[in-house]
Amino acid sequence: MTAPAPILSVRDVSVRFATDHGDVHAVDGASFAVRAGEILGLVGESGSGKSVTATAILGLIRRPGRLAHGSIVLAGRELTALGQEELQKIRGVEVAMISQTPRTALNPLITVGRQVARLFTIHAGLGKAEAWRRAIEMLALVGIPEPERRARQYAHQFSGGMCQRVMIAMALAASPRLLIADEPTTGLDVSTAARILDLLRELGARTGASILLITHDLGVVAQTCHRVAVMHAGQVVEVAPVRALFAHPAHPYTRALVHSIPRTDRAIAMEPIPGAVPSLLNVATGCRYAGRCPWVEDRCRREKPGMTETAPDHFVACFAVEDGRAASL
Image (cartoon, rainbow, N blue to C red; front, top):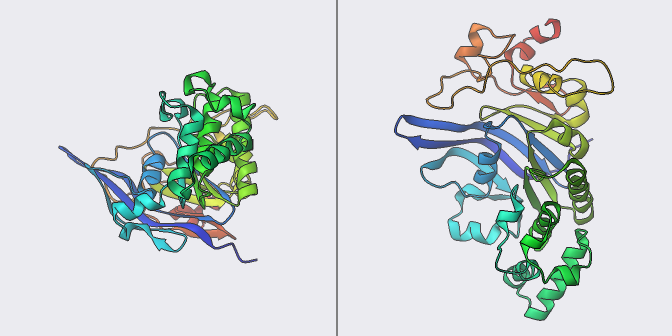
C-alpha cells in the first residue's frame, strides 16, 4: 500500500546559532515528512532541537541563528526560497502554530472573541459581524462552553485548558493544511491534557489538517500519533509508525526512551537514560549518541550514520542496526 503524499517534507535541515565561542549546531541534517491527514510526533529530550525545527519550518529563525542548509517543502512549495513577506502570507493560512504557553500568547487587553474574529478579518476578508459569528462558531467547535458569553471575556478569566482551546480555535481559523503543536499540554493537569489531545485528534480528523506534535512525552505520542520521529541532539535518529516503534524500537536512544517510561501494567523497572545530551557547540563528526551508547564502535565517532529502512516504513540511523550487530546485542 502506497503511503499518502506528504504535506510537509523536511530534508537535511540544519540550523546554526553563532556565539563568541563558535557555532551551536542546534539541528543537524534533520529529515522527516508529515503526510496528509496524519499526526506525526516529534519526540526527544529537552534541548534535542524539536522546537528549533518547528521555528525553521515557519521561517522564524532570527539572528544569531540561521538556516545553514536544507529543504522545507509545504504543499509543494519550497519555503526556504521564499522571502519574509511571502512567508507571512503562508503563516496562519497554510501552516499554523499552537503555543505551549497559551495564556501568555493571548493578548490580555483584548477579548478572546475579538482575537479569534481578527483572524477571519485578516485571512478571509470578512466584515466585523461575520467575523464575530465565525469566531463564536470556532469557540464552540473547540468545546468552549457558552461561547457567546465567553467570547466577551479576557484570557485571565479562562483556565489553562480553556486558553489552549482558544489557541486551537485561532490556529484553525484559516483552515490550515498543517498544525504545529509545540508541547500543547505543558502546564496542564493530566485530565485536562488528555482532553486537549483528544480534541486535537478529533479536529485533525474532522478538518483534514495534518499535525506535527512536538513533545518530550512518549505517552503522549502513544495516545495521539500515527507515526513518530525521534530526535537526539539535533539529529533525527528513528522514524516509524507508532505501534512499530513501541514494539520494536531500533535505535539505542529510542530503546532507552521507551525503557525510561514508568509502567504499571507489568513489573518492568524504569531505566534512566545514561549520560547527558552532548554539547552542541563545535560538535565533532559522527553519531551524537556515541558518548551514551552501549553499542558504540570507533566508526560511530568518525562517521554520521545514514537512515536505513529496517522494516516497511521504519527507518533508523545506527551502524549497529545497519550491519546487523544490534540483533545480537
